[in-house]
Length: 219
Image (cartoon, rainbow, N blue to C red; front, side):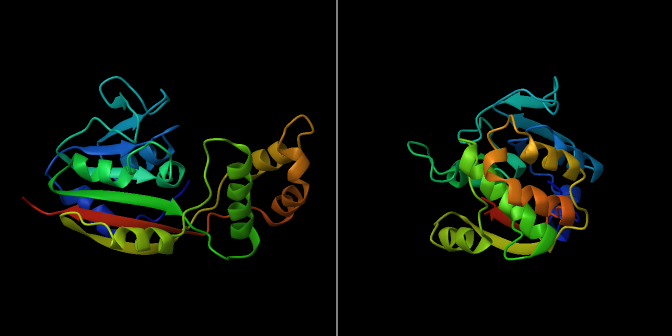
């Protein structure tokens, strides 16, 4: 996960928004939480499992499909939505997230999208596809065009803004990825030898990411 640089609109909201707290959903190991902290945000980190980002006074254990927050000024979900969409028996997460916002509050969704890029970015895309096939809770990358089409039909009091950004910094754990893909003891190895060779030679790159901003009407 990189999301660097962050969109100007997002940095402006981090700096200027005062309608309520800033909450990150699905913080996981806290990588994006640290990016937010470096950008000057004071974030309440939330996840369904305790991790290094869940610290006393600054974190909440909760399911991102039914977050317990209300009157949030800035709500953030980074590389989370694709794992929650189309889950049977669950409410649409976007509706749940919008309900958390204060009047005038903003929701930001960030998702990787290396699209059809070749080389290192293509390797990252193929790695995500492989993980989605073998890890039960993971889902494939969510293209921005699919998300925009879905949200265009959503009738909620507010409006969307979308953008596409190129990541500046590649992953720093390429060696670990190659080791995982080539470990004969792992389930992954049997279906990933070609990808492992490509990663070893070409490396990995996050490529592009897309972002979406929803601003709830101020009433």
